[in-house]
Every structure is written in structure tokens, then in C-alpha cells.
Image (tube, rainbow, N blue to C red; front, side, top):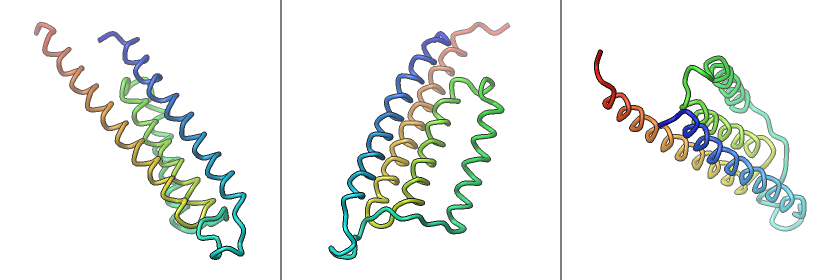
Amino acid sequence: MDKNVYKAINWTVLVPLILIGFIILVNAFLDLSGTTQSFDDAQSRAEFRWSSNHTLLTVGVIFFSTLLALGWKRIFPFNVPLALIIAGFCYELVFFTFTVGWVGIVGLLGLGIAIVVGVILMMLYSVFLFIERRKKPIQ
């Protein structure tokens, strides 16, 4: 496959997923802004939380984002699927940090979707690249 085909697939998958994630994030926080503390102690609510788990996840996201940025061109076409997975961890971090309760499952769901789509893309690219290498004559 041509390099432009990989780019088109990458961006056609990444941009809609990021936009959908952003819309769901905004919608979740708008729904949470309407909850009151008086009803059932607001099982799901917007609230800032920070602990060592948040710090660990943040350090991991920064570390892997830095590695990805340094090797962006070298690992093409796997760069965007890896970026999608890192974005999924960022999405989870937002819900993990700024919400309390069942609404946090939305962040886990977004992370799960990012991981599944990223792994599927990497598997497809691996198969495509394997087939391309098999077609080339040995010199």
C-alpha cells in the first residue's frame, strides 16, 4: 500500500474518534452540572480528585507521549494508532480526575474503544506490511 493510503486511514479513524470523545466528554460534564447534592448524595458528580494514581497515570502518559513524539516518523504507520491509545489514557485521566461515581465508566469505555481500535489498526498494518514484504523480490 502507498504511504498516502496509510495516512488517509490513520486520520480518517483518529479525527472522528477524537471528535466523538470530545462531544461525549462535554455532554457528560453538562449532565453533571445539573445534578444536585440533595438527591441520593449525587452518586455521579463533578469533583476534582488527585492522588498518587493520578500522578502515576500522568507521568506514564507524558513519558509515552514523549517517546511517540521522538519516534513519530520512524514508526509510521503505527504512530497514529499509538497516539489514539495514548489519547484514550488522557480521556480516562480526565474522567478519573474530575468526576466521582458511575460516570467514570464513560472514561473507561472511551479508553477501551481507543485500545481496541488502536490494536486493530496495528494488526491490520502489520498484515499489510508483511504482505508487501513478501511480494518484493529478494536481492
